[in-house]
Structures are given as structure tokens and as C-alpha cells.
Picture 1 (cartoon, rainbow, N blue to C red):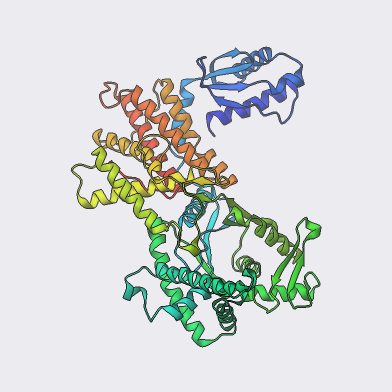
Picture 2 (cartoon, rainbow, N blue to C red):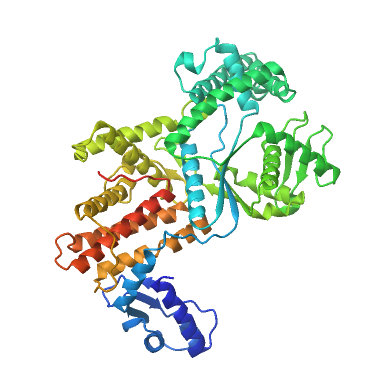
Length: 586
């Protein structure tokens, strides 16, 4: 428990004992004013209930805290704000407690599955996938740090009309080429044929329109789309030739995905494939029909009526018997809860799918699955570029691999301009460029609240000043260098007189656990990122205002080194929650 929590607890006791008021929590802030004190207590919530002025309430609370606890050295009241100065030794003791915060994690004995990535096997990963993967992976790391057992999962959309489009285009125009013969990464190779399909399909539509057919009808009648639809039916019927082509092209894609995930620094504990789960979904649909929960139209299509839930009627199975996304997601959810002892399942999917998940959760509840209440959609805003949104069919996406390479190149260019990596070997330089580039990318993506859409600017993200990954990495490297120069060894210091900079840094370090808990509760890595930035700013202020290496007082020097070491450990741990590695020299 940190000092702030102790004050909160004592205040609740005093308000109950002195004023006989229950469950009153006063806001306590770290004091940033010119008035003396470490914390400021906001007394105004009591004014209305006690019918007293805030100044007198502040004085009464300050006196009670002084008399009933050993905490306070002094207090003052300014315009109803109670400023309290905590005794020096409490900060020293707090530091000792905080130093042990990484040694144990209190287990919550709950298992949470976090789904993210969930790509289609008809194209490579793009900028949108980057935010998705970084967000899902970071949320999983934060939940684990908060004491949950976490299963990281993805479902690969490996079947459907979009997959058949790539397959058909390769069959018609590929001339037997492979990723190896073309020296192209597998997922990009297949993605090129998805684009090719769209180009040829548009030509066919244009030809039909010229013949006097309406554009809507031309889209349905174009030979390519009819062949793709037939291929999907053949796939669902187990046609050997179609299945063999499907297996081969998907294997190319999986190899490509693996390379991207490795560089992005994300991984998975479980992988599911829609080609397996869509059948489970069909079984659920039949079960729903048998129970009268779902209904069938004359054309054979199956629907769920959600009008009483404030939604509409939702298609679950097409008239030709083929699945829609909802069918597959129903089956996947049931399978996951059957195979794992889950208390919660989090879907990391963009906000364009908000309605889809509202429907999914309600259909599962109607089908009788009580755990539907434990499903959560981690909805996030789209990533946009200065020139607008991305369109994969037109081949205008920002490719994830190219983006990561761009980040590496920009990190290299900026590091060379600043002359930061002189006397490094080529291997060390490349390792630093990679860590700086990827750290910049990840931090920039994760410091934004997930719900907000964001504009990604690679140049802005790699800045060695301001709220950026490189600025934080540079501070970590600076502390590492300090500890090396000092031949640092951790020796406990139990008595030392602290200044305001040291106290502020201890308070920041003490906030780590509560930040992690809050980030786990809100599923927001942005809270960790912004905590990290505040911690680094506080450390830099301490570092610039205090002598360390040249101190003659060995006791104080040791304490300041201990404080620096714990700051470095907290930075490293917080960065790891964002999926970011550290560098020792920059």
C-alpha cells in the first residue's frame, strides 16, 4: 500500500468517526502547487453534507490526521484545499516497499483469453493489423502483470469468398509461379492475386455495363465472381483439387505471417481456423432452429430476430447453406469455452465491427450460453494516414513489413544525424536501429486511447524528445550508463533525508501497481504509456537537479543510485508491458 492509499484509508476512518459519514472518498492529488506539502486533499464534497465552510473542514481533517496518525509533519489549508506534508521516514520506508513490487504477483485465479490479429489468408498484414496486434498483445501482457492467467489467441480467416478470389486469380493467371520462384514473401504473393482478381473483375463489370446491363446486375453476372462462388461451394463440399490448392496457398501465407509476427514481437498460445469452426457454427444454427430460437425463411436462409433487444433481424445462414461470419464466430466462441476454463474472452477488433459483436453476444445469450455475459469487445479506432484510409482490394494498403522497415530506416537516419552510435559495431548499430524503430512504432500506437482513431506519423514517432518511445529508451540508457560508471551494487539505505525531487520520484514509482490494475480494468495500454512518460519526466527532473556520482555523502549517493536503479527497472518492466525492448546505449 502506498502513502496515498494510507492517507485515503485514514481519512475514511476519520470522516466516519468524527462526522459519522460512511463511504466518503475525498480526492487526493500529488501536490503540484507552490504551497508546502506532498499531497493535496480536496475537501469540497463534505461542504454540502456538513454545512461548514471548506477551510474549517480542512483544518479539522488536518488536526485529526496529525493527532490520530504518525504520518504528518505539518499541514496547511488554502481556499479549502488541505495540503499535507508527510514525514520523511514514510517516504524512505515507501521506497523499500516499492523496491519489492516486481518480486511477487498476486494471482487472481481467473483465466482471460485475448483474441487479436485474426487475419485473412488472402493478403499480408497492414497498418491496421499492426495496431490490432500491438494492442491485443499489450493488453495480454498487462492482464498477466495484474495477476490473471492469460491465453493469447487468434482465429485465422482461412476460408470464404475472399480466399477463393485469390485462389481463382492464381489458377487463371499464375502460370505455376510460387513465392520461391518469384522471390516474394508468401503472404504478399497471395495478396497480389487478390488485387489481380479485383482488377480483372472490374474489367468484366465494365464490359457488361457497356452491353447495357445495370452495374448492380453486372456485379452479380460477371463470370469471375460466379466462378469464385462456385469454388467456395466446391470447397465446402470437399472437392479435392480445390482443397489441395487452398492448402498450398494458405501454407505460403502462414510462412509470411510468421515472419511478420516475429519482427513485430507478438505471439499466440492458441490458433484456431475458421475452416474448422464454421461447421460448429452450423450445428449451433440447427440447434437454435430445433428449439425455436431461430427461424427459417422460405428461401431456406436462417435468421435470428433481435428486434426485442433493440437490434434487427440477423442472417445466420445463407439460403444456399453457406456460412456467414456470424455463423463462424458463434461456433468459435462455443469451442473456446468448451476447451478452456475461461472467465472472460476479449475480442480485439476495430470499431467498424461494433454492431457485429453486439449481435454475436446477444445471439449466444439467446442460445442459452450464460458465459455470453463474460464476452467483451475491445473496440478500437482505425489508424489513418495523412492521405486517408487504406483499401486492400486496390493494393493501396500500408504493408506491415514495409512499415517496420521504414521505422528501422528512419531510426538509422536520425541516430546517424545525432551521432549517437559512434564506436558501435555494425551488429550493435542494427540492433539499436531495430529497437529504436520498433519502440517508436509501438509507443506511438499504444499511447493513444484505444477507442480513439489515430493518425500515424512515422517521422513524428521517432523523436528523441517529447512523448515518444525513443525519449523513454534514451532515459533508460542514460540510467544504465550512470549505474555502470558508479559500479553499482544494490545496498539498502534505511535512513536518509529526502528532497522534493526524490519524494516525487518515489511517489511515481509507487503508482506502478495501481496503474497496471487500472490499465487491466480498462484494457488500455495508453495508461501504462502515459505513466511511463510521467515517470521519465520526473526522473529527468531529479537527475538534472541532484548530484549523484560526485556526492561525498556515501549514504545519500547510494540511495540516489538505488532510486535510479529502481526507476530503470520500472521503465523496463513498463516497456515490456507495451511489447518494447530496451537498449543499454544510445
